[in-house]
Picture 1 (cartoon, helix red, strand yellow):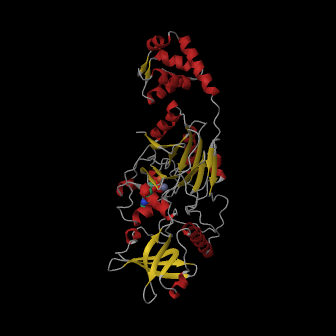
Picture 2: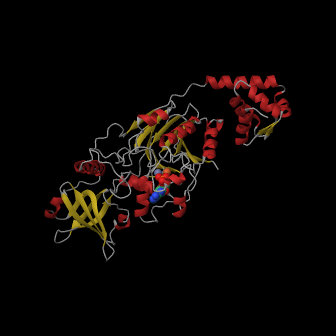
Picture 3: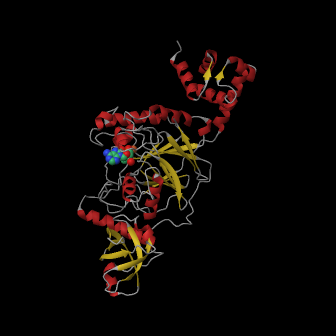
Length: 483
Ligand code: D5M
Ligand code: FE
Ligand code: ZN
């Protein structure tokens, strides 16, 4: 009967596609660092053999003591490698800065802040007149405001209403006009600019140009100087009966292999645990019914990640923080549970700059809304990065107020995308997809939870076990899929 140590060695080999004769397993067990010995044998001999036998090893190295000295060299050269100093800074973190008292006036403040900050983004392209003054003007008129109403007329034009601090004004986007092709992307409460001409009775503005705050098409993303990588994941859902524990362990085992040696960061975009009371009847889907036990179990899974890797996490709608966005980072009780020394906690959303590369992390609840509201040829659940591109175009992470996405009243609108990131990382829809929008890399990272009954009913087929890996120096993305 093999001991626990021997069994664990056999399992580690099998996981990576190898077997070994019992005397080789014994040798590995007796070596100074069994994990290093396994890595060494696989790197050195693994392309020729799938079962390590003593005969092969003696054939390759001459004797066990020769193998031992090769191993020592490898271990000492690894220890000479300078230890890696992580570089992480965080902006736009609401944690500890929440000012909202829940009063109506806070909602006024947050929309005022949204309008002011997005107007500044539009300023180089448009100098607006206050909406209450344009009746008295003539000729070409420019305005900026929040979209407060959207109607489609019986003749097929869009009739929208804009609102600024001075008042509101109706705007017609004729189906023959240039802006009409983008008018079906408009959402309530987003901030846009319009150039147009007044109707003869000065009661309406005919739109000739529509300006989204947008990302400039020549935007140059910042990249790192050193060749370091980050794995971007989300939606782990520990505590759910559908959490794919074995795929997670495949991923974390892989993180210890030489192939993953450049990975110094793991970023997790929310839904770390399944949570409790998230939807009616959720109890039946829970493996662990206590929220703190769920975080304890998640911590055990975090411990599988090598100590040298820094882990940055934001909460999602299944996590134990307020649902309204921006969601502050975990409280002290949960941080204590997730006590591993290399964990960093920040709010949803946040801009996390690692190695000089700004990465916008947002869990992604508003993606459901964007995908439901906008035309299916422009955005879809199959390619959620198209919905992420819309958020960048609108320079806001949750433009529409008051339906699916809950917003917390704050003095400052933390969901405005002020600084343009190099990378925009979301999750929530459980679909892996990536792309670029005006040179910003968009990544939706899939999940670690097999299809739930709810998802079966609405025909969502989740992408499970995908790990997008970002080269921080080239901003190239490679994908590992654990199946
Ligand atoms: O969300 C996973 C995905 O499933 C996301 O696209 C929302 C969708 N989903 C999940 N539950 C519901 C309910 N009850 N109504 C509507 N849409 C839902 P997650 O945040 O992991 O649950
Ligand atoms: Fe999720
Ligand atoms: Zn979610």
